[in-house]
Length: 222
Image 1 (cartoon, rainbow, N blue to C red):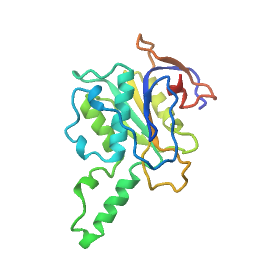
Image 2: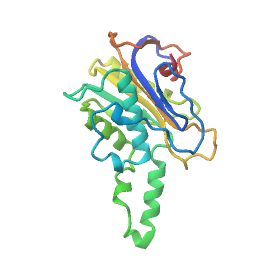
Image 3: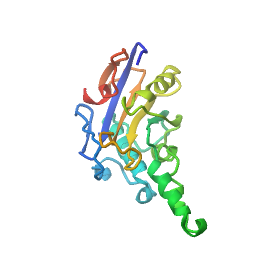
Image 4: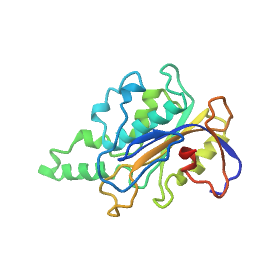
């Protein structure tokens, strides 16, 4: 990270196979292929999305971690459109869904290809679920991620959007939910999301200096 200046952190949250938390707690990630530890979303939002029961694991992880970050930033209001964008970085994306859907097409010449799996074979679908549920009208897109530096690849895009002054906030997230994309068990699995702003507000959690020593973990550990 070579950009200079400051951004303002309004809130953040993380989720993994070890648990979940908000800003100020140290995220704990590992290559464990165990189940993710989800929060009880009904404690934070007014209702679950209508399609929640059909979400794939990648979308469940993205949505749940976004809720944690938005809760921490006090941005879970139900009413009104919100000028907020979403950027997510991932190296594995929805690899498991792509693989499972391909396998379903191999049966009976594709006769049993799963339409539910097909609907989650794009990483952007999870972002769309978040944007629709929370009435976000900003840009939503995914970028790649260097596994050696989780989260850093998305920051230039986030900073560019913040510098444009067109969006109130940007929800940024790193997520790796695949069980099959990496054979290396040290490959971290989980998600970490943060709400960033270029404007200092009363809801500020932290001022982040964008120096060469910046780490994505600075948005969570405090």
